[in-house]
Image (cartoon, rainbow, N blue to C red):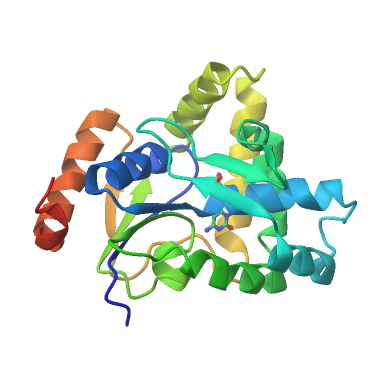
Length: 232
Ligand code: DC
């Protein structure tokens, strides 16, 4: 087991994971892994290199050599993503890209190819990891695992607002259907499905303001990892 602590935050899209994680990483001064961004970049790369979404060996090979750099985001901002020297931070945030990412994420060779790359983010003083299988597979030994949930209707509303704010054109009924499709695919795939780890703390954010969710999670961090909080 590594001595470097990890806080895993998993859950479906629209539960507040991204905001919570970028806040925690800045608050603690820890590293940040947005694993969804990694799957999204890979989807962009597969399209660039004309690989069909079910070309498992081709996409796995691409995953091994993917030229991508991430920067810890400012609180409330998305991670900066530089792919082959180009900033694609905005491009990867569309719902279409999320859907392609969810499709390639069902391929077991692809998930294996990304495993070590994700684990390398575990650097001192600690890591906040955002995703679907952070607590169950990638960092199964993490000392604090959080699993966020919210009703489907509330998540669709939040995603709609987020995408609008980013300047994307969105249609709420279509977005609601896309999210439902993505939830089903992510939670029913055979490899590393979206689900809470047995030792995860589940937080339902449906009726909570994001500031309240953050306070709740800061409290959990103080209780579970008092040393991590000596400076915060
Ligand atoms: O968190 P996100 O919406 O950016 O993730 C996009 C897709 O990537 C998600 O629908 C499923 C996949 N994903 C995954 O399978 N495992 C992860 N750890 C993170 C994301």
